[in-house]
Amino acid sequence: MRCPACQYNGTKVVDSRPVDDNKAIRRRRECEDCGFRFTTFEKVEETPLILVKKDGSREEFSREKVLRGLIRACEKRPVALDQLEDIVFSIEKELRRAGNSEVKSEEVGEKVMDKLAKVDEVAYVRFASVYRQFKDITVFIDELKEILKKNPTL
Image (cartoon, rainbow, N blue to C red):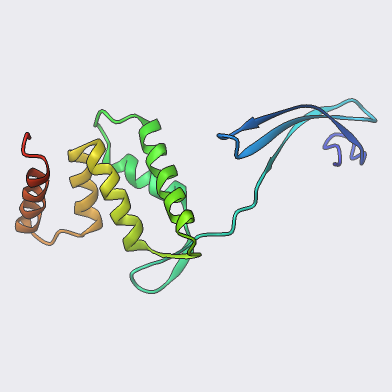
């Protein structure tokens, strides 16, 4: 590995430790010429997961986009960021385990709603109203009735 300080092409590993739930390795390196220390990360290169949108266009699955949508839905709600990150992680894990390199955006949206409904009903309704593009109040009320059927204690 080339030293970022002096460009010498020889470094030694001083320390290694797993990070990101054992999905990556953090290495502290030292230049054998100038002694400069720096950090590198090593992780498995995953095949891209392609999202097929409603209009037929394709784009790479983005954890960040899903997380931003969840954060927006949970604004001013008692939901921890860790919970939202866990939702995104578990959805991506489920999609990758299915073994398909392409997945429909509707499938991702439904998975998000299923998991969000278990965490916070208000956030679920917010997300669903944007995702399903509620046209009027009756569709919104129907969705609320479905929530009440699933959880009659509310």
